[in-house]
Length: 388
Image (tube, rainbow, N blue to C red; front, side):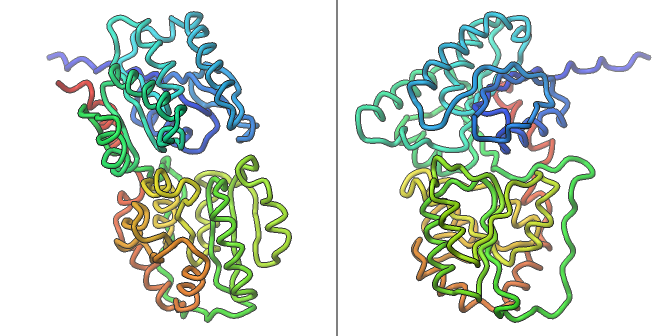
């Protein structure tokens, strides 16, 4: 008796805005773990992770600067021209995934070069501020996106608010969508979760201040300003522990702000995910709210840091009325009424070590898959547009 033939691996083409960006790397690891045949067509950003080399079959498109729309438009055109030299890598694709609008334009062009045409997924982890701009630039960008959405088989979002607040009411999207939250990805043998700590919590003091973390991509200037004011208000009773890559085009005064305050410490970039356990062991709480596009993207998103912090038992702080705040209020930490230093300082002053320890132990008691992806979850999402 002959066995059933093995199913051919799904062939993915992934179009990304930065091959070295942490969430892109997480996603590529997950696709490979699912057994997919993966080829990347990637840009690179000048300020990110310069030494990184892709561990997947990758076609480098262009290096792109931050905050330069005209140059980025030129790289889109140049990338489409480059595709013709790589038609052999395009052939036989089952699914194309494009992360952000620039790459959706390139991916749509690639799809037209392939027969039969593969499914096209538009993956959205953020709504760029231009997409909600009320002026002429915003209208042009939304029009371009609507045009490309006509060729899109599915939108994959990391927050339900992106559909509820933008794609459905603004772009009138009525097609297929899928929610894949921006959770942690851990390879086999990756860092394990800590065990609950039965010890007696230490009281806060100048020798053992409350440690508030800010972890990940450090690019939110309002958050930096808020944390600096809290550092000034609470003095030696608090330490602001910062870990990650600083986007200096967004926070040009980062170094000066930190240097002026002995209770603000930047530890630099870290290995992901290997460095996370130690980082969160050194924090009592983590500031999880994004503020820099308040009222739109920052109010709608669900950041990766709430999942990784929760996985390692570190409670989060966010702002009421935001998608992040709603998730954090549901057992992940605490919220404040407004994004201001007075509200945050008041919360930090009233929280006891015992309260924080209890919340930490409750997080560590939750199921791992609340905070990290499984191959089954990722594979099911990517196969969705192939299901009739």
